[in-house]
Image (cartoon, rainbow, N blue to C red):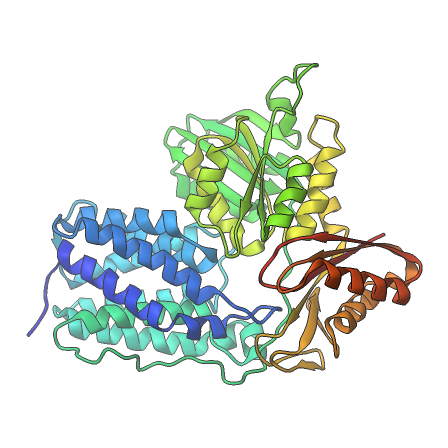
Length: 528
């Protein structure tokens, strides 16, 4: 039986079936995830995102397609976790925009909607990278468009789309060297393939509820260097009044000039937020499309006057932390709203944290590069002046909070905060979740290891691995070594580790604190 029309009820079923397949194979996606610490979570993040989309779509399944698609898009945005999850949510938002006036669609409108979905996802990223979910989505959309010109049946169309997506997924290791090094395909792209196959299985002519495309790693020794977080020196914000261009056009004009770019609002008034090395050039580029007003560069504390007798600075701080011990630490350093989570926070988590702050201006230490995109989406919904500080981990976040505290009530320039955050070197000490090899060092599953700056260190004990990592950091020259314990470790274990490190590095000072993180046994850092 041909399926030639997709209405709201059908779209809700599409979402549910796709989410089911992502849930079923989320561990496969986690195994594909390429991280320095072998405990990937792409599958979990993608599942939580599409599950929320499916839940919201099901609530409106009897409504026209436009309403169901809008509900799915909003649900995915609020539930988005991790980079791949936020990208998926942007795709659903793009599709919802395309069908916003339709009760039902045919295959051609479905194909053009897929094109708009991919375009929306690319617009959300400052520097789209090929060899990722974007490449797979591009191939699927183009295949749908070519076939929809003469194919009216959704089953045959979706079969062709799935084949094209799978072929594009096979090409991702050739497009992205880090995937080739690890011997895997892109986890986000694989998640999209599973989602599409789930939707295909919903159709009447398909009966088999199992995937034809298992994507487990080609080998179990998956371990590759962590990507570096780029430097963003100047926080620049302004209102563009009398704008003569759409948000997308302004985003394209400013995209080469910085990172963390957000263009919000509608013509004729647009709000711009960007981290850049050249704020003057950003201002000049934007001035071609309207009048730049309310320009703010560097000193966010200038937004509001501070009363001399005010007991607190005129800003609030949100800090993502991986445990209850870290929560206490960041509170002592001035964070008003610690966001305690063991996984990447969702857009909703960030939004609730930002709206819980008392001050109108909010600084967010993401303390995980995978959480930055969700934080930026929350900024668009908050209605506040929010500055995202892209600290890569909790150790960098603590150093950044120390730098903010040194301002005595005024916020230091952004480059000073980020420079301070980048100063300490850190490592995670853990029991390997799977076999791992990097730079000639091999660690078997369940054995002690430490990861630092893209390097892997092994040892017979956790203390051996920690000492090896600190030695590579230059700890023999002295400095301050800080140990944060969590996982299965107790205070007595931290004491023993501190004693071992004092013996190994007599020129260094050793401190230890309770971190409470669950994913690793110790965070350790060295500061000169």
